[in-house]
Length: 169
Image (cartoon, rainbow, N blue to C red; front, side):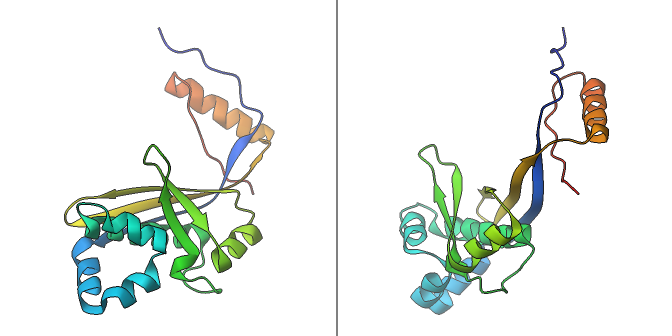
C-alpha cells in the first residue's frame, strides 16, 4: 500500500543559493608542503586546524574543508570578493559528525544582506579527491496557488510524500 499523500504544506523552503566544489587532495598536500603553516593559518581557523591534524588522513580533511568553503562562496554568489576571507568561514562538526557552518566577518555580513537564515553543507572525501555541496536557505515563504498545485501534482505522480524546494520570485 502506498503512503498517504499529506496535505500541501503551509510554507515552503526558500532556496537562495547552491554551490559545489571538488578538489584533488594532492593539491592541498602540495600547498601544505610548499607553504606550511603560512598556508594553513591563512585558510583554516584554529579549530579547523586542530580537527584536521587530529585525523588519520589530515590532508583529506583539510581538502574537504577547502571544498566546503568554496561551495559556500558559490552558494553566496560572491566568490572571494566583498571583504570575505578564508577564515570568515569555519566548518565544525556536531556531536554526530555532521558538518556545521560558522560564519564571521565579511561572510556573516553577506549572509545577513542576502537574507540567508541557514547554510547547510555536505562533505565527502577519499584518498584522491574531496567534494562539498552547500545550500543557502532563506526564510520559509507561503506557497502561491500555482506552486501549491505543482507540488500537489508532483506528490501524486510520485505516489509518496515528496520534499520539494522552490525558490520564491
